[in-house]
Image 1: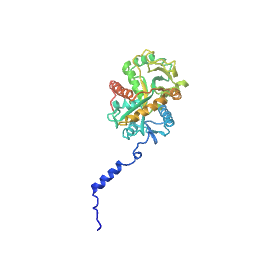
Image 2: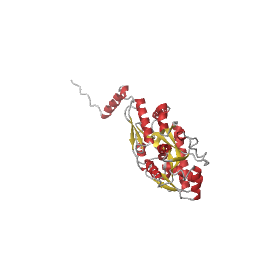
Image 3: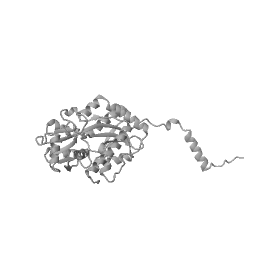
Image 4: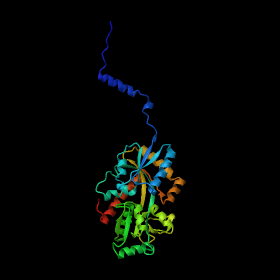
Length: 331
């Protein structure tokens, strides 16, 4: 007599499947080494400037070090409010990174009522990459022979001097706010849509002065079309060794550098953050990269993730103080 076996229940089938999964070969679930495919570095500004060039140097070296492509993804516009949310909302697997200038991570919190990202909660700092000194430049060196002469003119005629910036809350604007606040003078702000346009109008004589990141001003300083009066730095730059610091020019407490840093989406595993930190530090310490940065007016500035996080927090507070003192109303 043939015995008919009962059909397995749904529960039995599910348990059998679970058992099969547990017994699956280990290689099927082993994680792949990082990186094993293309890594995108979002750059929240356009190409053709010193920031973009610096990130492309880094991407090339990371490709050489890892054997995987690192591509630069330019997402320009809206003072970083287009590019940064892309990274803030990205997967935390290390395949979407961001190279951000200081202002988008620090000043934006004070000059905008709302941001589509939280600069501290939505990102995992990896390392600061490079510093740039801010430099006070003019076109008419006969009118302003020194930083002291410019300061005297600003005090004698409040609001008579016009300064250009690349927009509200930009590094140029923040440097000018520091100058006005701490030197107790008032000048007229003329914002532009980008540093190139600001420098163009300074070259054309339409504004009196500009606080510029050294890489932006350097080509025009070399040709003599613009004159540097003082560096907002604690030491002179060998690129313009004859230009004094603000302190040497008799204007103390006037140090400001802008920077660019590498970040991942918030929640990225610490092991990935540490791996990228080590790889980038090795690249920044190489002599060829140091020279490439030097040639465009930058100085390599690697940090630990904790140091970078602290820098961001400190500058958010400092920039909030400067914006409040200036009376600038958040947009």
